[in-house]
Length: 114
Length: 112
Image 1: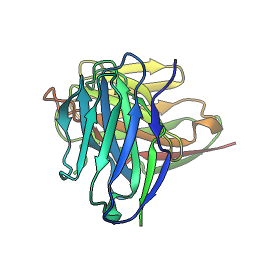
Image 2: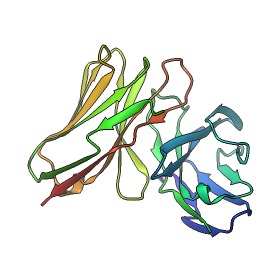
Image 3: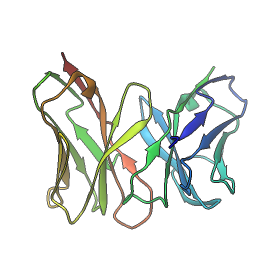
């Protein structure tokens, strides 16, 4: 079966702009989580969506937001981009979420803010 | 601060040798997972171990969990060049919410 698909793979944006990243989960998976990975901070949890509702949220400013559609596809939006937002953004899907189930990750979107 | 911290930060071995990496965490957990990440790509789930389990195996992988020491170890036996990757542990907060915390990872290089 098809894996988790993230688009685009690479993105270059200017400081102050906004960006939208997309994640298509594995068919049948209802939970989608987003992570930010940087060399300095490592992998950090952004938020999790389940059945179109944000169920859990990490410690990120309100500039980071997301949503999930009825087909479980999810988008993440970052407004007023800062240089420090440059990172690899990963999404992961699982059947129902939770740390007691396996999560499947996409290849990530590498965002560069200049 | 990170809930899980891997040790060592980097490990370099020859093909055929065993690789052991450790993960320590601060607060009680319900579940601990190990993931592998090849350079700049997505993570691949390796093993899930629950707090009431002490050891799990999957192929050449062996994971142990010592809740009294708040630590876990991942052993890769008979390493191959293809095992070259970063390895991360992820823990929950023991409270039932899904907010996984990842360590900084161990970078493993297996020389052919």
